[in-house]
Image (cartoon, rainbow, N blue to C red):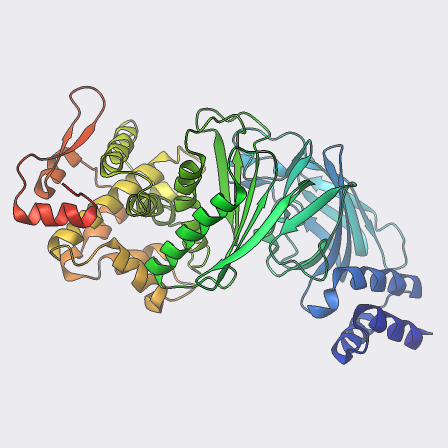
Length: 502
């Protein structure tokens, strides 16, 4: 009987495929399942396509309910007695409070007697091969709308990192959705509702009604965009803007992202204030949530500026394999790189470039700068994180000015990125040490990053910028960054290399 079940399962999943048959045989004979359990798992396998991925930790079925919650049922490939859900992320606490009605079942379909021992922590008395639970995805708040899962109205954002126990690093996931809903996410497998996820913590899915998806390539990188809602812009114009910026960052880094970009655009389900949008880049996915009533005068221009920052995160830090808290670089330096990119692509002019830096300096001055950038990165989610962004961006600006001046405009901060992605920095090393060493590697820049990043050096742009032909006036209560009227030849060359055209 077992032999016939094995053959039946193999034919269902991949008719005539010897690898599939052998994987099912290994899977079934490895675990002491009863015949009924074997039949159950084989059915799940044929839908989840787990036979193509022998390293999966389990098979999860996520049922999306229009009541604003999901029901999860998981078949585990290894028996377990403890499960832990993420309870904090990006300064947001209590995420695991949403997990309810947790049950665990043994191989013989008995109750494994699971109980909650703490927030997001569950234990069973017996070995369990199946777990099920509900996650209440109530309306999110302004602070967490782009960071955690939610379902509101006809749309939902599902981030597997807060829906699946942290004990699982990979899984096959199948979705059951309300009528007329669809699901979109990176790593689409055999059909539009089954995914193999080798890195669960990076997986993001967009579910909802009337979602539109398009994919085009730039420089060999696929760029997929999924849009929900009704907007004043044309989807193909936004897609073209995203591809243009992806090409720019390919040129900057020299690195082609094999996975490309998966961009999700959806209506904001809550009010978030004056910015009118929120974003999150995780893995190969960029989530952009926008207030449909934002009233942007130039939608494509506004979205392009947002993309200059968020799409660069696909390279920094998502492609990098560095350890530690180096947020000052992948947030602060990325902000400056995005600003430079916006200037080069003529999304902003040089005056807006200067005005943005002046506004950031005013924001920086509003905080007590008594921490190094490394210390500020370590405390980003327990204190105000603005110092990481503001000071990090200003240090990148000063670095770019200094290296351009020392090289007569022939070398820029961009050269360090090319070195970073050309293999100059090894994987799995401390990000702070590696990037400081990289930034300080040119003789003319020796000690610059060490002083501004590793030590708590206060920025005083009023005294630093005149050497570069710039002046900072704060007499009116709001800083103004200006070009000096009398520039020497060296200063003109430097500022023109930045984008100044007069």
